[in-house]
Image (cartoon, rainbow, N blue to C red; front, side, top):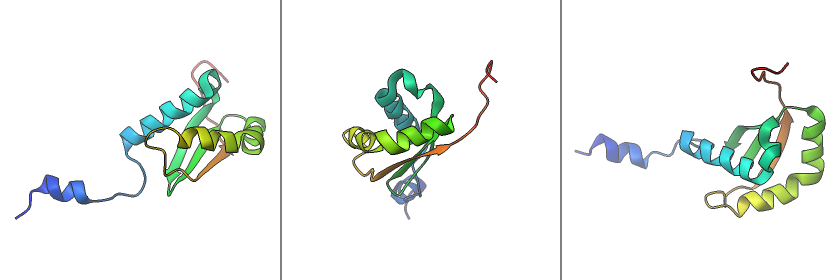
Length: 99
């Protein structure tokens, strides 16, 4: 008879857990610094990181000009070695006090 904890620790769930998502968000903030205010993590599956950007123009700029450098910087961080692609998409979300 196996303990439930040992069985659950052997399961591999798709995608990162809450702790990994927080680490990814911190890594993005570390790379972008002050510019991370208009960015948030959308998804991370099978080595593909999707970052949601507040502005369509900024999403295009990051996708066209900064994607390769960002991928190299993120892959150099511990725990992100399996990262294979970074993509940006336009997103809209309300921030308290801003319209």
